[in-house]
Structures are given as structure tokens and as C-alpha cells.
Image 1: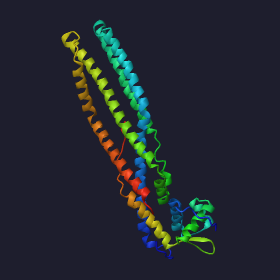
Image 2 (image 1 turned 90 degrees about the vertical axis):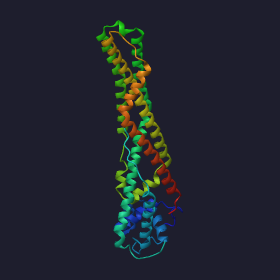
Image 3 (image 1 turned 90 degrees about the horizontal axis):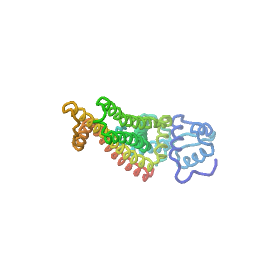
Image 4 (image 1 turned 135 degrees about the vertical axis):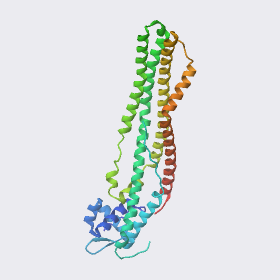
Amino acid sequence: MNSEKPSSKPDLYVIARIIKVLKDKRKLNRTALATSTGLAYDKLVNYLGWMSERKFVEIDDNGDVKLTKAGNEAYNELVQWIMKYVGQLRFPRLRPRT
Amino acid sequence: MRERDNPPNGATDMTDMITEEHVVSKVQELMETLDSIKRYNAFATSLKKFTIIIVGFMTIFSIIVGLIDFYNLSNTLERPIFFSISSLALLIPISGIIAGILFVRRNVNAVKTEEWKEELSQGFPSALKMLIELDWNETFNEISMGKISYVLYGLMKTVAYWIVTFFALRLIGTAFSIYFFQRVESVSWFVLGVLALLIVLFTLGNDLLKRYKEILSLDMLLMELRWFSFEFRKAEF
């Protein structure tokens, strides 16, 4: 695995994409995961390293990647966190008149 | 964050999916509102040409009315000819208003909307990406500019209606005095102006009220989005 890690503040969107795919497909090898998430392989490996350190994913001896309960919870927390802010927004009905 | 190695439990998946759908649905509402803002902003880009069209047609009309008054055509021309010329002249500002409104309408309808729809159909990660990548400052500028332009457009349209009504009343007044008194009696411009204003306000009252409510809604939206962007940007996940 490439030792280079994503910057200290990783892209939440990329992490969400990886977790979303793993939630849907349960288990995938890195190449298939890179294809499913639309990420470059190297970038995916960096992110997997970062996520693996935080026990969000597990990589077995065959190179298959699996989402852990912690990863699933992190994703749900992220959804709840976004909902906390977005859920409070009230949008008016706007129809510009000419 | 707790470290657990068990696989995700399917029992809570349904609830999680509902929350995800809520987020996506809220972001969709946000994007639809921002599409509406783009439409308001189209007033800003159209306002200059709209002004040129209205002022241009009004200037031509004013020159014709000035010439009619200068040469005293209401007394020198045959009455049917005078009324035909005056009525036709009145068509000039009316055409200007119609052309101006159609121009603005075309620009507003040409605004591309729902470009985000395909991306958002990919679910929560895409909704998250949209929120992260939104240029809030540009959005706030667009709302402010759109609001000001919308107000100016409404005012300009009302003034144009008022001018047309004023001259239509003047023409009707002249016809009335010729018919009943067999001569041209000039009605006070002030009276005509006030009467025209009352007619325009009565006719456009509902439209103006709706515009006013829309402006208030835009103000509220601006406050909501300012709060949201502030909270969203300062929050740490």
C-alpha cells in the first residue's frame, strides 16, 4: 500500500463515496472499488490507508475491502451531522414574475 | 468514535436510508431554490437592455406627442385623422412595454435549471459534495443583485404603464371635450397623472403585492442561507 496519506483534512465526499459503495456491495477488491467510486487507484489506496487507521474499513489478505461497524457508524454520523444543519432550512416558494 | 469490527447491521439500514433520503431531498429543495435565484438574477442581466427598450420607445413617443402639441394638430387636423395619429402613436410605448417584457421573459426562461439533478440522483455523497462545493458568497451576491433588479424592473414596468395610461387618458379627455363641448379643453396634467396612477395601482395592485411578498421571501432566504453557510463552514465533523 502506498504510504502517502490524504491530507490531515480528507475530502468528506470521497470518504462518503467509498463507504456508500461498501455499504451497498459489502465487500470489494481495491480495483473494483476504485472503479465503483470513480477514484484513481492511487488516491483510493491513500484514502483506504487513512480509513483503515481509523478502523472504518478492513482489508483482508486477498486485498478485499470490507466496511466495519465503526465505518458504518461514522457514515451515519456524517449523515446526521449534515441533516442537523440542512434539516433546519426552510425554503420559500419563489416564482419570478415578468 | 468506537471501534467495532462487526459488519454493519441491516436492522438500522432502513432508518439510515430514510435520513439519507431526507438529506438528499433537502439538498434538492436547496438546489431548486438556487435555480429560482438564477432566474431572479436574469433580471439583473436583462435590466440594462430592458431600460434601453422602454426609454427608447418612450422617447420616440414623447417626440411624436411633442410634435403634435407643438404644431397644435388637435385643432388643425381633421378630427378622425388626429385621433388616428394619436391612437397609433400610443401603440409605440405599448409595443415598447410588450417588447421589453418579452425580452426579459425570454432571458428568464433561458436560464438553465436542474443541471444538478443527474448528479444528485447518485444519493447522499453527491448531496454532500454539492453542499461543500457551493460558492456561498456568489450565491449571496446573486440573491442581492436579483432582488434589487427585480424591484427596479417592477418599478420601471409600473412607470411605463403609468405613462401609457396617462397619455391614453389625455386622448380620451380630448375626445370627450370635443364630443361634448365641440372644442379642445385641456385637463390638468396633475389630475390626469393622479388618475392614471390610481388606475395603474388598481390594475397592478395584486401583482405589486406579490412582488413585495417575493422580496420579503428573498430577504428571509438570504438570512437562512447566511446562517446555514456560517454554521456549516465552522462545524467540524
